[in-house]
Amino acid sequence: MKAKGKIQVDILWGIGHIWDAEDVARLKSEHNIHGWAVGSCPDNRQQNDVHGLPVQIQPEAVAYLLEKGVAEVRSERGAAGEGPPELDADFLAQFKARKDHVEFPLVGERPVVSVAGHGGTRLEVEPKKLAAYRSLMAKGYTITDGRKFGANYLVYDGSPKETHAFLTLRAAARHKPLDPLKIIAAARVAHGARKFLTIASCAEGEGFDEGDVRFLTFSPEGGFPKSEDVPSEDADEGEEAMPPPPKASARAAA
Image (cartoon, rainbow, N blue to C red; front, side, top):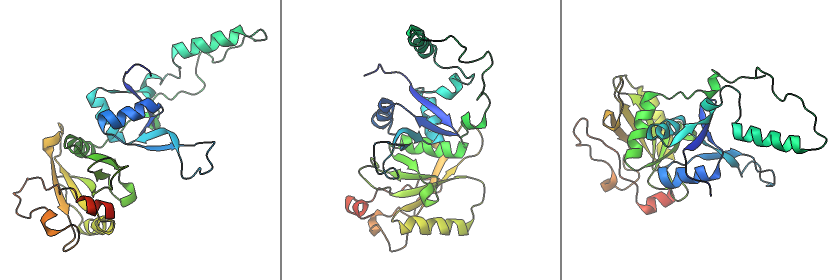
């Protein structure tokens, strides 16, 4: 096992990619971050169903890890088109050890392709999404991508391998109006999948933290779960209205 260091992240088209299996395991066990595998497994017949490394993580997850000081973006370190010196030296030593080797420049003085400044290697995170992500992580929830349900996030009360998401979440600026028709449409999608719809209202301006986020949750009238599990409508303005996780039986049926 390699010595523990910072988790290595590559940025491709604004999304984090983890190439090391041990780093993926550390993300789950130490930081409660679960990504999704997108690499191919050549020896597996089910290419559309089974995937391997790399594992993708959301931009907000990358920013969260960078804030904690436990990750390093490799795309920035190698932006000049240079590989790790120790790997280059080892490769050249093996190459020169061959009796039939021929000396020729592998790379010219100027790289053929430079990724410096390329848009795909930049990490761009919306402050409102990062604020909501940070707040949910502080509360101990597990978060994955919610695009499948037309949301920013899916939120779990446990590992995604062991339980279903109990709500879909959308981040919104606090002082900007919300389109009622969009809320209705989002609620129908969420409720149809037996999930709550939650709007994370984030304060505008700089200095986002957990205290800048308020939650407004929509649940179907007379639907799931039982009435005692639905958040109280008597909450004071500004009081968080995150619903309790559905009971085990409700999660199993979701």
